[in-house]
Structures are given as structure tokens and as C-alpha cells.
Image 1 (spheres, one colour):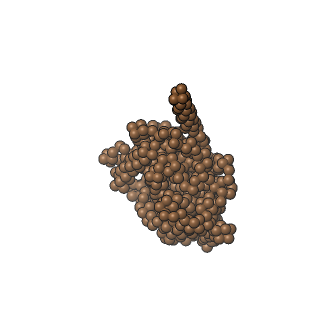
Image 2 (image 1 turned 30 degrees about the vertical axis):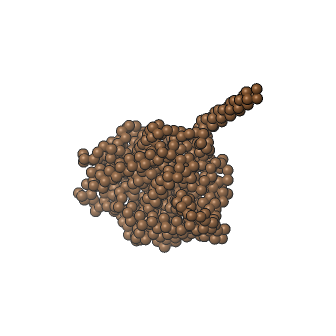
Image 3 (image 1 turned 60 degrees about the vertical axis):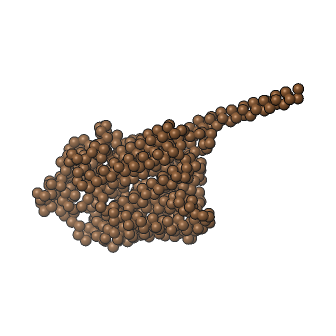
Length: 601
């Protein structure tokens, strides 16, 4: 049986805060990416062309690109958010990894061949070629807003962790991390970002392993961890409840996360940018596979860490006893709790947490600068800028957008649970963007009118649900209490009658959704389904509009804009039309010849 947790275990005195050696380790992990950015931006060769800045000169290797993708997609979600989600709501989130092979097949078969062959600086150029300029601008605007909202969420979560283990100002840390990211991203270009991400992903991975090893030993071994979590109703994978209004079920998580996977891996500009930076198509396919395997491993490790958290705090919930103010702080608390006796180790682990968010911010800023430049500046510019001017413009864009993200951190800190906030906010744009690209790639008959109608309908409908749900949550009319927690093992100094009011009592399958009876049913829809609804609404409206106003003329459609499996429909139509045209021309020639013969006779 795990020992009870007492007040001494959670005493955040100076002995539990960073010492000088741990600060040295932490600062070193901040300095190294800066040096890498300077090396690639100044010494190795200035990023003076769009190709160098955005695609690394198309000579990047499989390993660094894979590691960069991992870092840009892992972020602090894997180390901080997923474990706290498992601690509060159980392991149902693991069901998302069951269909990863299917997702890899879809991405490598339908999306990747199209984008790699086109070799575009911005994936949104595809939408202009496939539909029109308006669809391109609206879609790129949506993803830009999504990324700008996502970055401060990740930075805030990390700064919150650092604030807890160092005692320094949350906003000071957030500003410092952001400014470092802005600097080495703007100077080093894609090469600087990729190699910085490689370093950071290695640090992140080893931080997870260290937490796992020490955590397993501290908890008394895998058998004890399994038993405690089983008794606490945390072990849950196949909750097959079809109710779309339940927060976490097999179906809500699987459908929602699968579409998010397609969004991040198949059409996200950060991913496409790295795929096209590889010299050969087969290298891009390798990256898809290795990235998916690596991401699954990291996320599975994060889920296990969530089980370690519950094994440690199952009888003394730190949220109920006010040792932490929000569940997102539980991982830093755990790190300081179990690793505090090994000098320097806490600095390494926390550095891994910081590296994950820095990688996300740098990769996102590098990508979004290219989108803003290609989709707005270069289009509206009266004359085509030189490569040097274009590179400088993208660096300025990185700085401006980075500072905007820093300002939004003050807004993010007012939100509730980070995972639900991240998925909810990004689903508005992700659902619409996945629909638009998919409509273009797999529907040769789709037109720009249908694409635009579906895009707008998707954004409006999901935004309506999101705003209604978030308003109800903010007003306390809609709540998502977690699974059972306890303070029975806490020290008497930590427990009062008031503390018991903050513990959870639910022991059933899934997690409850509690309303006061005034919240419309549509606002209670699981946040995992937001992105699914966005895609379905887009397709429904887009197809309906095209059926009413007319379908795409396949004769004027470039087959390279369609998935390889569907190109034959376009080619057959064009071949038939070409043959008909030849026959028509031949008939006209015969008629002309016959008329001439009649005149001669």
C-alpha cells in the first residue's frame, strides 16, 4: 500500500525550489537554441532566400525533420496537460491511438502526394489553384488565428509550471521564453528551428523517461500503480456509450482526435513545410511513419505519468487541499515532490517541459510567418520583392506575431481546464480547414462556391456552439467534475471540513456533465465532437450548394490537384472530351470537303 501523503511532502520551502545548479541547467537549455539559431542564421549561411528560410534549401534529413515535427506537435500538452487530464478524468483519451494506422494511410495516400508534388511555399496556394483567391485567404486566415490562439495556451501552461517550481513571476517566465523563441526563429529560419527542435525533443523524451522511472519506484511498482488506479476508476478505454453529449467516450475521443490528427499531420502548414523540405517523396513518407510512432510513444508515456499522479495523490488530492490552484499544476508539483532529493534532476526535467513549448512556439512562428507573407504580403505587394526582402519581411512577421502571442497570455490565464480549452478553440478552425482541403482533394466536382459556403457555415455553426458552451461554463451553469478524489490520507493540518467540499465523488463510467437545467442540449455536446461537426457541416452545405448551382467542369481542372486515386475521373473526362473534339473537327473537315466537291461538279 502506498504511504499516505503528508504536509511535509508538499512543503514548498526554499529546499523544494530550484537551486543554483538547477538554474544553470535550465538556463543552458535556453541558451543552446539561441546559439543554434545564430549558427544557422549567421555563420552557417544567412537565410536570404524564401527557399532557405521556409524549406531549409530542400536538403534536410529524415531524422531532424522527424524530431522537429515531434517537438512542434508535442508541446507542453504531452507533459503537463495529458497527465492532468488522466488524473482527473481517466485514461479514455488513449483510444485515440487505436486508429493511427488508418490515419497514416489516409494522410500518405490522399494528402501528402498532392502537396509534395506541387511543392508550394504555402499549402494555401493549393486552395487558390483548386478553387479561388477568396477561399485561400479565408482558410489561411482561420489557421493563422488558430495558431496565434494555440501558442499562448502552451506558453502559459509552461510558465505556470516554472512559476510553481521557482517562485518567480509567471509573466516574467512567459516573456523570457517567448522572446528567446522569437529571436532564434527569426534569425535561424527553418534550419535553426529544426535543429533546435531536435535538441529540445531529445530533452523532452528523456525528461519523460526520468519521471517514469522515479515515479514507478516511488509508487511501489507497476502492480501497485495498476491496483490504485483501478480502485479509483481511472482505467477506462472502451467506454462505448454512443451519447455524443458525454465528455469522454470511445467514440467522442476517436472521431474527434482522428480528424485533429488529419488536421495536424495531413494539412497543417508546419507539417507540409517539413515534408516538402525533404529531397525525396519516400523520405516524406518515412517521416510520417516515424513521427506517428514517436508521437504515440510520447503520449502513451504521458498517460502513464497521469496514472503515476493518481497513485501518488489518490488519498490526498492537492487541488482540494489548495496546494495547487488548478489541475494543470499537478505535474510540476509531482516533479518537485519525487525528484527533489537529487540535485540537478529537477532542472533537467523542467527543462524538458520548457523545451516542448519552445519547440511548439518556434515551429509555429516559422510556419505562420510564411503563410502571412505568401498569402497576404506577396499577393498585395505592387511589385515582387527580392529574396532578401522576402526573408527580412518574414523575420519581421515572426517578431510581430510573437509579441501578439505574448500579449494573449494575459487572456489565456483566465481560462479553465487547458486541454478542453485547446481542443475547443482550435476545433473552430480545424474543422473548417480540414473540410476545405478535403473537399478540394477528394471531390473533383466541388466548386469554389460550394467550398466557400461550406467553410463559412462550418465556422459559424461551431463558433455558435463554442460560445454558448463557454458562456455556460463561465457562468457555472455547465460543469465537468472529475472522477473520485480523496483527502483521507492527508495530514490533519491540511484537512478541514471545507476541504471535503472540493473533493469529487463520482465512481461511474466516463465523467459526468452537470448542468443547472437551463443549458440547451447543443451546448452540452462533447468538445471532442466540435471538429467532427465542423467537417460534417462543411460537406453538407458545400455539396448542397454545388448540386444547386452546378458542379466543377472537369475539363478545366488540373489532375495534380486531386488525390491520385481519383485522378482517373478527371483524366477520363478530359480524354473523352478530347476525343469528341477530334471527332467533331474531323466531321467538319468532311463536310467542308463534300461542299467543295459539290461546287466543283
